[in-house]
Image 1 (tube, rainbow, N blue to C red):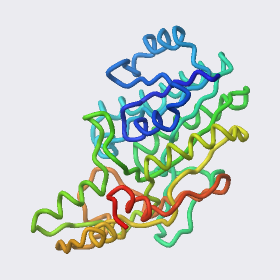
Image 2 (tube, rainbow, N blue to C red; image 1 turned 90 degrees about the vertical axis):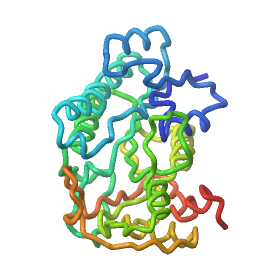
Image 3 (cartoon, helix red, strand yellow; image 1 turned 90 degrees about the horizontal axis):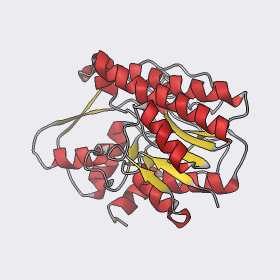
Length: 288
């Protein structure tokens, strides 16, 4: 039986990966268990546990802090590049499998009507966070030539039930519901089109990928039906029969340090399609 290790196990994705792989009794580590920026300690822990598969759901994902703070950028590099390089080297040496998650932000299009990026399209990140995620991808792909067994999964706009970690970021939909309780105007970007992804669906799709064991490579896993932030919010408000004051705005009208792509849709050409994010949102909030 495979000995599976899940990193970032209490986060927004890791929580549901632990559920999806529960029958295999995976090892589950989070920051409370191990400082993953300490490569020496991480190496010692891996040597002691000897997993045959590492599922890495640990990452730095504060897009704006990464852009405006060099200290945060260095932390992003430590988690999104250096840790990934170490894990890839360890898995190659041990003939273990590495499963790693990347982001739609390794891509960017200025065309809101752009149909989307395929798995083998050339990345072109436009912010520091996207650059750190791409750097991690490049470390994996460089070792793939030496025989690394890997699954590099790109995803986007994660949302879902509350994670086990109290530090886990609230989803866009949680934020919108909280803002709708006030009677103030909500500015919502009517651009940045990509695919909302339900964390339990992504975890289950990851399990199916592992069970099927296709060739190593890059896989795009998101829920179906691309949408802007405004389209997502409007559907949410409709579900809850809410009518907050909403002002659609362009990306440039919101003061944020990091530039965002107008479109970063991920096209899944290699795996079974996931259901629409709208159906997943209905399930999350128990709406028919």
